[in-house]
Image (cartoon, rainbow, N blue to C red; front, side):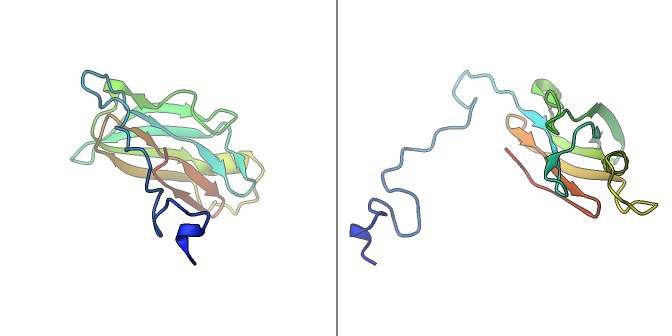
Length: 153
């Protein structure tokens, strides 16, 4: 294929447009600007494709010696999200955290057919925060027999 005469004109063969604008600095990195990192989450039921409304969530801080400190207990809203960041600003410090999702109780309460005991009960996600000026979004995708997460935006 002749790239000079294709709809890809102005692009390299394997990359973005050659005339792309320069990459912008991350929010809050300008000199004198205030930064405010935050931690958020949401939960989706992959069996139904719907948000997991009213699911219990606890956020713990994990000390270097393994000691846990409870920081937040909340529930998801109708959209499967929390109404405000779990942590933000000065409350978000570098370190290790653990989100614990009350999946088993939620699955039972929402009519999923489960064995007794259920395969999943509380689902813990332990993760580290290195850059306190960023938005850390830690979603949970869940079904009665599995779950996954990723670093969202």
